[in-house]
Structure formats: structure tokens, C-alpha cells
Image (cartoon, rainbow, N blue to C red; front, side):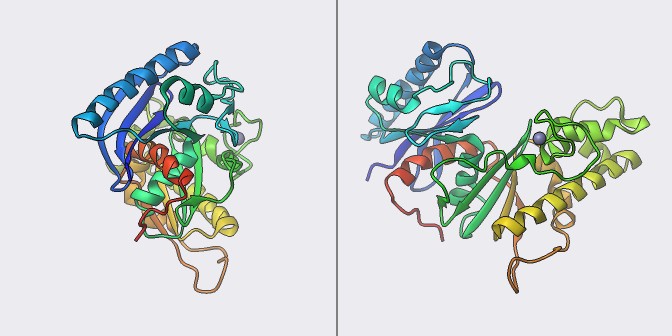
Length: 311
Ligand SMILES: [Zn+2]
């Protein structure tokens, strides 16, 4: 079988494309381009550049590209169309990505929601490897949600992709969705910064990373802010446990690294277990940025109904 698949991870400012060996989870080569938000023609041109370069690379090894998978920041349909990106990518409203790419480049194309794709990457190649029920939370500009069972999605559509909007508290910043106290508004990069800036002494901090750094250096207010964030995450994870009973929870995204020293505290004690002797592991992603490209490429594998060796 030809295992070379292109995985495309469309991010807020950068789009990362990887030439992936889906059998081994190796990203052989990657290309970073600015994310095109306005024009479909530019987007297709950029994809064309990626496909041309990767086809050349594959040909040098006497191989070819089997397909292309994409993680889309929005809601995707069953027929490979983007229903909406909620205005993030202007041209991608009811946009038939699969049909256009397959026609233009004669390459099988598969798409899905970006956070679900990151979850697939973590489940197949990352910290979720070897676990049956893997929940991945991607903490960055928002909170992405991806749930994978036995290396597959549990539903054809990414219906859980708003899972970051579970309500955790009655206080805190108002989320853009209209509610107050959404997980997404509390432990995203902006949310963490807001929590820190609510104290008098942390007004100068500019990023969530800076909050974690100040806490690690013993700053009293930063430590309190981090304690608050830990509590929110603990509550959220245990809410998800009641619904999904994951045996591995992976924390990914730009903020996750800062949480690594607190993993046992975030895990904490269970409120309720879904079944007797239930246990779960909590880990920070080691794939980091690669998870999106790997998971996107693995969409091809799902479509082939081939099981990746997940032991
Ligand atoms: Zn919300």
C-alpha cells in the first residue's frame, strides 16, 4: 500500500502541510504558508504548490502521493464540504473542498474539523497511542475538542466540536458565544491572561505563557491565577469523564506545555466514576504542532477503513 499522504493543518495565521507516512506517523517534510482567508483561488493555488512539491519528493523515492487530508477550523459535512467556518475563512461557506481538490489535482481528498483531527493525530500517533478512548483538548486561541474511540471518530459529523463551551463557573469573562464561564473563555490563551490580569500585580503580562513563567518563578498572584486555571480544567475534565469515559485525556495546543508541571493537580480526585475501577491518564501532548498534520493525513486511512496498528 502507498502510505504517503499530505496532511494540511489550517491555523489562525499559518497553514502547515506535511508529507506524512501514515503507517509510521513520520512527517517527512513540511511546508508553512500564510493562511488564506479571503480568496478560494489563492487557497487552491497554495494547495497546488504543496502538492507539486510533495509529488516531486515522493517521485524521487520512486513513490507517489495517495491522498490529501485537511483539518478545517469549522463545521464540515459528510460529503467533504465545509458548511461554515463561522466567518474565519471568508470563502469557505458551503464550500465543496473535496470536490474541487479532487477535480483539480486528481487526488482523493478528505476533510474534518481541525480539533477533531488533532484528536485523531494524538490517538493514533501521540500520547493516545495504545489507549481505546482518547479525548484531546487543544488549548490555544480557543478550546478544541476531539474524541476518538479505537482509532476512529464516533460520529460521521464533528458534532462535538463546540465541546469547549461547557459552562464551568458563573463568574469570569463573557464568552463570545453569549454565555459566561465557558471553559473556552477561561483556559484559552486570552482567558488565562484575563484571569491573571484581574490581579493588581500582573497587569504587565502579555501572554498565557508569561503567566505560567511568573508562577514557576514563585510570583504569588501568578501562582493563584494558575491554581484557578487548574481548578477550572479539573472540573471540565471530570465533566467530560462523566460523558465520555476516556482512558486517556491529552492536553495539546500552545498553552499545554505550561500546564505540564501541574498535570497531577489537574487530574486530581474524581467526583464520580463512570464505572467501578475506572481510571484515566492525563498527559501533555508531545506531538505538539505535528498532531494536526498527522491527524489530517490519517483521515485518508479512516476513509480506507484500514486499522492502524495502535498497540
Ligand atoms: Zn462559550
